[in-house]
Length: 447
Image (cartoon, rainbow, N blue to C red; front, top):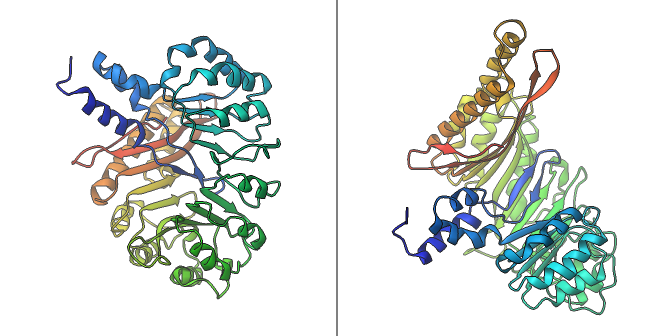
């Protein structure tokens, strides 16, 4: 069926679907720090492309706009068919050098790269050491940005590095990046796990920084330098305080952190839910030194009800909340979570880890396990389907009460026993659930 819409309008709609639905950050629940990801085309794009020929023609360029080469075999296979879609490629992602070795890098550099006429962005894996590959990418006429996780272990002193964006410069770098900055390299995000190394901070003057991440650890961090540092980076709009606790601060915190520090110190007196990570965003339209709390990562405890009430009053600008529920909530009724979260006036996204472990469904799982062993068997697939249904039901109820909510991220793993008594994994859910319509029904894939 031909859609009664002009192709130009369809192109705009599909471009929004392709690139506007993925968030740029998901939590890493093992380290409890944010894990940065670059925007990827939506998985819904593939299904949309087979709806009819009109949509297929519009979707095709977006399906091949981002190509990832993870290993040598992938490079060899891609070489066979690359001429068919090379003209659509806009972003090229290359895997780590341990997987994409000299052979794969050579194929990419000599065979694939010359065929891409409209390449804009390149994402490099760690420790790329092939000078010819980097040189060819730098020389590509349409490339505007080259994202690197680590600085190349080759001499780049004779190259203009103004296209290079170093994603994580800081104390985790094995050597000083000064000479790279002298050649024009930029940084949008820097991460320091040792805020005492002021000498390295000095080289980061006026580099277009957008995100600054500080790993606080267990010891107090002196902050007199922070206000001066922020004043020299007008494009900086996010600050992340990672692995924070009451002992992370001296009494010299800058004014925009004072209320946060006070709350953390007060909370600690009651053994409450622990604030682990805090994301701050610059308050545009106000004084340039004003910052708002936009994201929190919490390890909830038995005081979660009181804590969420306090945070809702203290952080009205909070948009993203991460709850790692793999901790003791005492007698807290998870059914009250919807009303507790509804107190946050700006909340858009909630990340849950181990949500099913707190739902009444957990006792149902135990019953199903017992019946599986001693009575009526339930297959792992049946249990997984039931678990997914419980998640959808709970998050839909959550969306109906929290009217500002538009997305929920689920990470949940469940274990049980097969009919032979072997310990097995019953489900592993990782994915986005989104509010689909005005009825606040939630849907999505939890593959």
